[in-house]
Image 1: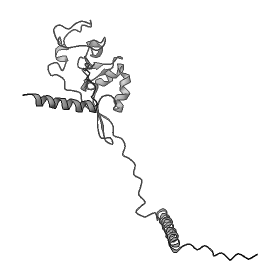
Image 2: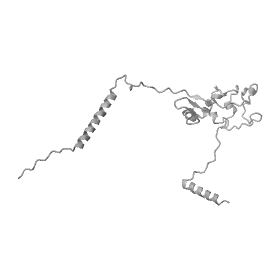
Image 3: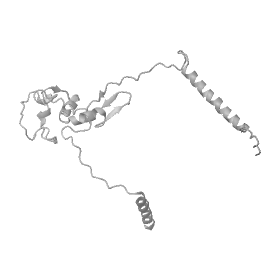
Image 4: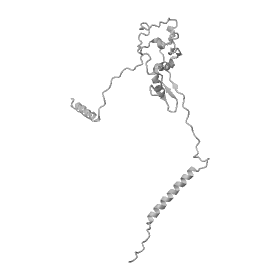
Length: 208
């Protein structure tokens, strides 16, 4: 039986050797750069000192709307006047006032002894500019939303001072509920908008 002729060993073409050599050199360069970046001396410019974020600024409560000079200070008229605690319809002064705030009446919020301030349910007196303390006694579910900027309006920079509008900037304290808005019709789909526009253009062309 004749012996098989010896087979030549596989020799890759020259372009493959060049390709693998380039890949190997590139890998060595990447690992070398990585080791240099991780072993730089402490005084290298890449060692940045830690920079903590600035502390959050204290929130600021914006002032309420200016009081009407005709009625404030209230003590101008009520200082020497005897207080009548009876719930009644006002006929002489403040007869144009619309009071629609649950079952509340004037003295539920206004102090009977010092008319220039308000009072809480525990009798503590608060100034008019701090009336939000009075509001949140009954509307405590809105307090967290108001502080978080969800309810009401909060202005300012996200990394700066947060400015809060007090309740009376948006709500009338005597009638705080907003009037119902008339619902608008739903939006038209695009094909109806195009069709209505074409019909309108045709009507305008037909007009003499």
